Structure formats: structure tokens, C-alpha cells
Image 1 (cartoon, rainbow, N blue to C red):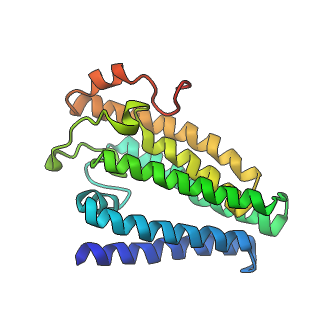
Image 2: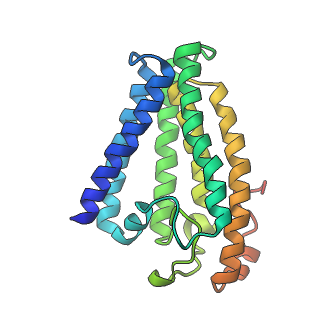
Length: 227
């Protein structure tokens, strides 16, 4: 019951905060892209949260923990600051671009395509979490849960598939909100995630047996055939 209440509370707080950013930045509540985005995000989060509660409550419990934890390296705590600022600040910029400044004019069918991209990103991230029950939101070795190296599913393609999915999530967010300029945040996020990957891999190589062998087998860190 505690996990259920935590999920409900965090869903309300999280999306309430997102709604405030979007509509304050837009300067109006008459913003179709904002409502479309929030509606899809709430629906997907409720569906996937409910599924994870049934199939892997341990991972869900980990993912509901705060973004700053005792076991994290200091470097990871520091890199999370610009990443979170980019995520929320970028969302506000996208809303302002589309609804307040009208810099971007996006056809409705592109926004609906963005909804499809968001769904695809969620499905990919869900695949990642179903493959890796240790996909915590912070960099740490989960010794209490018996963490091991995962080499199957999306991890056979790229070493950090959760981050790969996050890039498509941000791209979908920009399209649904109706902002062409917002797509620039995808490239900025990729750079920040590249820094975080360096921090994470240092932790995994020193604290997780077998990770060096896995890294030699799977060459690509974030984007297949690129890096």
C-alpha cells in the first residue's frame, strides 16, 4: 500500500509541477499542445506505473526514490543539476516558443506524430526496465539487490539504452508541444548524458564484476554506430 500511495502522490506532484511550467510559460491555458502532452504523459505514466507495480515492484520502488541519494558519487549529483534544469527549462522554453512567442508554427499532424514518438520512447524505456531490474535513476551499485551485469535486450545494442530512449522522449516532447526550436535540447541533453555516462561507467567498472568484459563486447555507449 505504501508503494501505491507513493506512486499516486509523486504522479500528482510531478505532473502538477509540469503543468505549472508549461502553462505559465505559454501564458495561457488555451494551449492545445500543452493539454495533449500532459494528457498522454499522465495516461502513459499511470499505465506503465501500474504494470511495473505488478511485474517489478522492486525497480519501481527504486525509481520513486529522490534524484539525490547517499550512495551516489558526488559527480553524479552535480551533473544531475544541469540535466534537470534542461529538462524542465527546456519544457518551459518549448511552451513559450509555441504558445507565447509563436516562433514555431507546427502542423497538427506533426504534433500527433510527436505523440507516436512519445509512445515509442515509453515502450523502449519499458523494454529497458523489463530487461534490467537494476535501472535506478541514480548512479550507484545496488549491492542490497544483488546487481549484476545485464547483456540482453537493448543492452546487447547499446550500453545505456535508458538514455538513448530519453533522447527520443525529449524530441517527442518538443513536437507535441509544437516547438521546432525545442529540438535543439536533444543535442544538449546528449552532451550532458555523455558526461554522465563517463561518471556511471567509472562506477560500474570499479564496482560491478563483469562490466569490463561487457563493455568490450558492446562497443556503443549511447547511440548505435556513432558513440
